[in-house]
Amino acid sequence: MALSALLTSGCVSSDLSFRVDKRLKITSPHNRATVRLPVTLSWTIRDFQVRTTTDGGGGSFGVFVDRSPVPPGKPLSWLARHDTECASAPRCPDTAYFARLGVYETTDTELTLTTIPEDDPTSTDETSRHSATIVLLDDQGRRIGEIGYHVDFELKRKGS
Image (cartoon, rainbow, N blue to C red; front, side, top):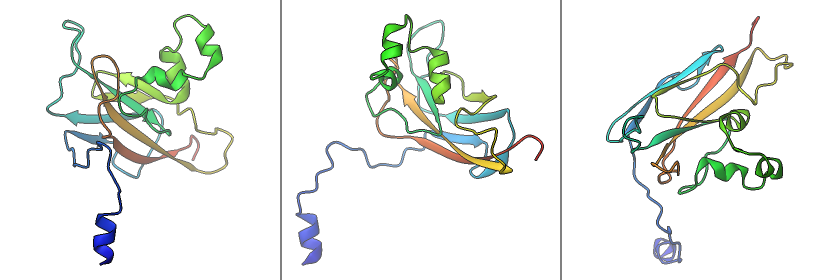
């Protein structure tokens, strides 16, 4: 009876895709690894056309460090939608703007982080916890679906 009530309670998934997508595999760092800067995130991908400079078609990857990715269907520029300073600056948002937010777009299957924006260099802890989420972007830079590939890692501070 309770199962029947649960199944007929009106919960609708509104076009969410609840399937396992294993096209992308993060190969470095391993989940919960302890690393030092610079840290290189690397991954493999299959069944995804990555944009090249010669054809202009295909997608790219959005990498989000210590933050949630943009919603499905939204471009990276969605992050600046309420930023009045960015709205008044030419070419904003740009690569530097996104890097300050811990957001990167790449067509490579690796990304080296020389700094981590959220890291507090004055902290006395020997390590700090961080995460990275990689999403697929279409040829217009919009997030494809709800799928995100995630890795957690600990950053060992200099001198530790």
